[in-house]
Image (tube, rainbow, N blue to C red; front, side, top):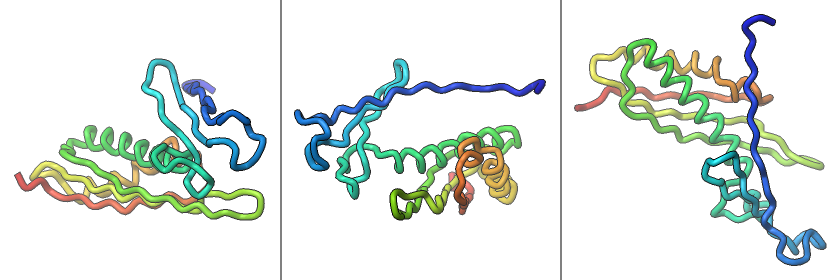
Length: 159
């Protein structure tokens, strides 16, 4: 296929939770791990506290929701830049829901709630509409099998 590019990503996940007995028992080990990729700062990971994880460390569920939020933001900023809309601030209060079932679980929904401030005089209707396009283009949203809702709020800078 002409014009199709591939990008490859390599990370290492190293379990650091052997408390001396390995996985001899469900309570005998920590879920802690480090996520590394080249020279980037490591990410201290664990499991969700509901699964005996450390609440002070990132868990895979947090990282999935964060990935969806960050991907949407990056596309949105790109589209605004191309459209001549000046974004001055962007914050997302993203939330995800995971349901447990027999033998596992799955995400059922993620909701992104970006709050965007644009420069006075910019088209807020266009700035709001660009969220739809950002969602359509987001690599991560295109890779998941559950709904990702986007509920944006765009305001004009007061100064």
